[in-house]
Image (tube, rainbow, N blue to C red; front, side, top):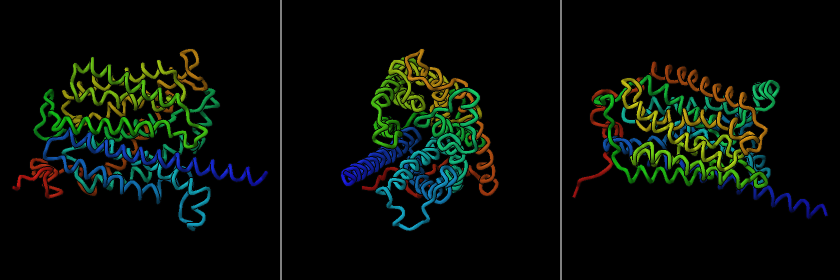
Length: 400
């Protein structure tokens, strides 16, 4: 009998390892979506740089998270024997891989905001520092109960801060960090308030959006991290939020293809936090509000002299992420068809805490790196474009 139970346990553990590995692969693929979305949005002279940044940011983030960040967040490290690492079919290793893909999304989000004028190597250094120290600090507080903040929220308001798949922990964190970097850099040279640079390649922009949409179901559903925690509710809520964001962005954005392809992303950002709690109708409303919020704020930012957010990552991830955190405390309530067990005040305070950590952390990291080496390209390099200035090659070749 014990042999049968042991065999079942091994199979279950193997299944969990495979499950979270597939989730890690799906979220890893989302980074290709970030790359193509940015490539399709920036001007032709910066397309190569957009692709290179996402891959190199991921590589530096992986090292930073492996060596420092994961230990700060969860108190675990991998500097032990390989035999120890293979315990439970290497589940802890694959869990690290999965959570790394979340951590590396932070620099990918920032990349879209500082595009076309951010200096390559200084931002690589800043990305590594953020993934090593700033992001894991907040991740550990919210997802591992570090420093007693979650326990305090529960004692005061009856429930901990709930962020199932990272509306605040990942997306809001990335969006508000990006805002700090965007503000420090200033606007692109030649940009005039009220006159936006048109996307260079709508098909690539659309491709990036679709890759992100598909991968997002790994991002959300597989945040359960084990097979016995999988819920079809998370999948359908993600779907409904995506649909809601698309439809509202279509209407409010007046058929603009850029808005239409960012609308579903706004909805998915917002639903992450409460995707395991809400009723699908609630998820549709949350996604729709996020889609409209993105279009309205991004349009308003085009008239700003100082805030030049190329891909609109602050409204898309920063604002929609905060909205998602708060919305989980509204639409997760049983009175609105949700499963309950969530506190509006905990959601509000937790969301604000994410913004504070991002702004303070961003000011420290970007401020220090900027003192060491300018975060901004020189005027000449910005004029000729990051492709030729940094990588010495353009995105297309006219040779016969």
